[in-house]
Image 1 (cartoon, rainbow, N blue to C red):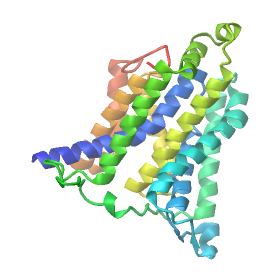
Image 2: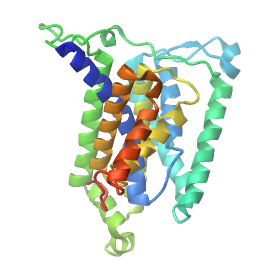
Image 3: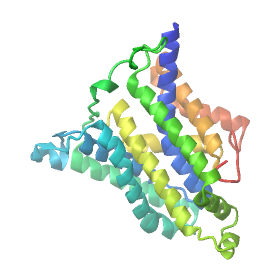
Image 4: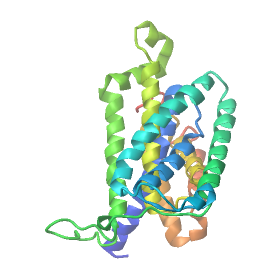
Length: 313
């Protein structure tokens, strides 16, 4: 394989890993800090994809919108990329207050059943509104083809790396570094870590852990919403994508070590690599590759790749 082919393969793997990571990081920090299993996190990815689509384009949908002709603002991809996480951030606040908070003290099985039910209901609702036909984001011209830089054009070895995949990887890298910095250097991040270790003691010391927990839930939601926009630019957007993303993301969280951000990052990178390899060699095993990887990893390391008892590590 040529250098260009290797680089192109790596960016396929990294872009897939980026989507899983943006969703999985929200699952990881919410479970690590709140001990809350949120399968409804897939609703945020689903909502991000369709809200972004409505912002980015104006087109004919099926379902109940089928009789309305062209629907959407048609503002383009960049406004969708900026505005969608803001909308999903607000949706995350609502979800935390009215869906998650009443179940914080309930059994994990109760949390799993309720949030899984919400995900299924949300997908059916979207199918009724938008129809079940898949669609894809319209990409601006500068996101099509290989990456091209001013003055130098396409860098050596990058001719097979599409611009959209480079954008997905670069944006994800920035956001993951930002969440690590949040936990390490901000008062809110330290409050979340203190509340994770001993919320009762943290409150006795005057730390209001409820507000930081709400913030971190909303931030994780915004990451999932952004992943929905980025995923829509790479793959078809359908009413079933919430389920398609949440199960592998949960597997990645468990494989990496529940509550460990570093483990989640490593798990997502391995999943992306296996996904890209299966796509090239055995396309029929593409989706199963992540679960086969998890079987191997959890057999060798039952507690995950990087088990951690402290969120943010």
